[in-house]
Structure formats: structure tokens, C-alpha cells
Image (cartoon, helix red, strand yellow):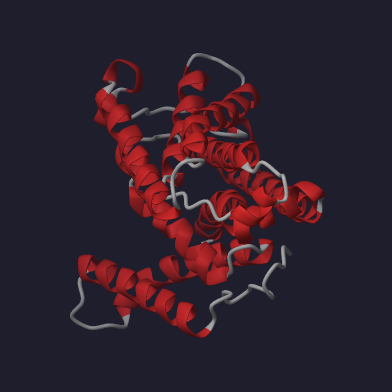
Length: 296
């Protein structure tokens, strides 16, 4: 039971990292990124492929974040010319293009066969202890990123990002050029997703293209919206709440007669969708969100 809870905690913290990255992009700057999973996949495969070549894991994690951030550069440049709805479509298409490329380029990624045998973090410590060490490392990283996000939001750079999200035209009229700042925050959020992907790869130790479907992106969005976009506590606690709901509902079939495992999965998604609608209607700032403009 402890091993199961630890594994769920690790996955939940990975989602927290993804949500914190998305919170920088959407919560502060209002950049609609429906391609979170693309950078998550790039980070996982970058770190996994390098690790299989004997590269130290620390360098693999750095490479995962850097490559995911660099890959976000062209999308960030596109955000300068696209409105929110068009940017959402482009990023969603980009995520599918990345997944299909990973699937088709079997000479590099082994395609649908996936990458097995990835080295696990802290593997030399033993299976149980290594999971606890991964959990502790992720917890420290999430706390560090959360603290950094709060500090960034309170800085002149963060206030500029919020001004871009509030009224970009007014900011431009004041003589500020928001272009490079939008690109920077898009790359920063993507780099966090890449690091999250590296953690995922070296915890699961086996990755395939089908693990990186658009549903992952929408789970991250659900957690952020239900928790409260624009706030760190909304990103963190919303992601944790979503994970508790998704995992806890797996056991609901034991109390709901006549419902199969497949049927329960459908009911679970329907319940999450209903919860999202209710939160949007009755708690528009999210369950854990503060007043408008709050960053904590």
C-alpha cells in the first residue's frame, strides 16, 4: 500500500510541475498552450535516449529541459501573430505532430515498441527506497518552482507578464514590447514540462508514444482551471485534487454494481467534466484561487 501511495504521489507531483509550467504561460500571460504533452514527451525521450547512451542522469535532465525549451521557441514566435483560439489549435496540432514523429522515427525512438530498460533514478538504493527518494526530490523541486513562481510574479518581469495577459494592446501603447517576454515565458513553461518528462521516464523506466496523448494536456488544464489559474496554490492543489479524484474513482466500481472497468473509466471522465463545469460556474477563480491578480 505504501509503494502504491508513493507511486501515485510521484505522478501527482509530475502533474504539479506540468501545471506550474502551464500556469506561467496561461495563468500569468494568457498564452493558451494545448501542447503541454509535446514538451513532456520531448523531455522524456531526450532524457531516455541520452541515458541509454551512458550519459549521466543529471546531464540527461538538463538536456531534457533545454531541448524542450528550445523546441518551444518557434511556437512562442507564432504566439506573437496568433490570437488565443488559433494558438490553441496550433499547439494542439503540434503535440500530435510530435507524437506521430516519435512513433514514425523508429530508427531513433524505436517507434511503437517504445524505449524499455531506462535507468531508474536512485536505482542503486533499492526499489522501495528509490521511489521514496524520487518522491522527495520531486517534492523539493515542486516547492522550489512554486517559490520561484511567486517571486517571479512579484518582480517587475512578472508584473509585465500579468500586464500582457490583462491588456497587451494597452501595454504596447505604453511603449513596452511584449513580444520577447511572451517567447521567454513560453520557453520557460516548456522547459519545466521537459524536466517533468525526464522524471516520468526515469520513474516508469519504459516509454512509448501512446503514453503522450492529448488527454495528458487536458488533465493538466483541468487541474489548473479547477484549482485556480494564475495562482501557485491553484496549480499545485488543483493537480493534487484531480489526481486524488482520478485514482480514488478507480475503486468506485467495487461499490457501483453492474459497471465494468471500461464503463467506470468513462464515468470517471464524465464526472471530471461535470466537476469542471460546476467549478467554472460557481467558482470562476478556481477552488484554491485567490482574488484576481493574486499569484500565491
